[in-house]
Length: 100
Image 1 (cartoon, rainbow, N blue to C red):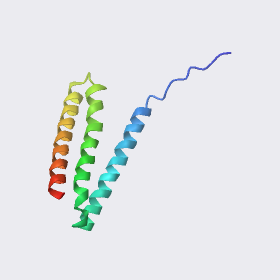
Image 2: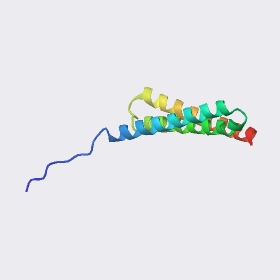
Image 3: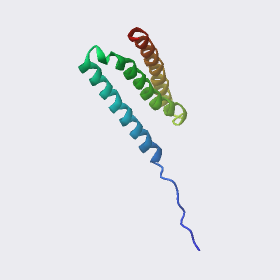
């Protein structure tokens, strides 16, 4: 019996990446708004916002480094996003230290 050639959806990885970006961005906005509204009680959320921003930068920068490695501009953009992610992690550590 002839079996049809089934291939995986080539856009599945991009759909999953976009879903992760939207989820992390919604969490950043939610934590940021809560931290601003609650004032002193919400200061715990500032390191969380910076940490989530670092994760967002890494999830966008790492695929640009390894998947799109032929394009020099995308590779430079990936390095820049990873550097920004490291900076965000340092800011998250500093704010966590000052808050707690």
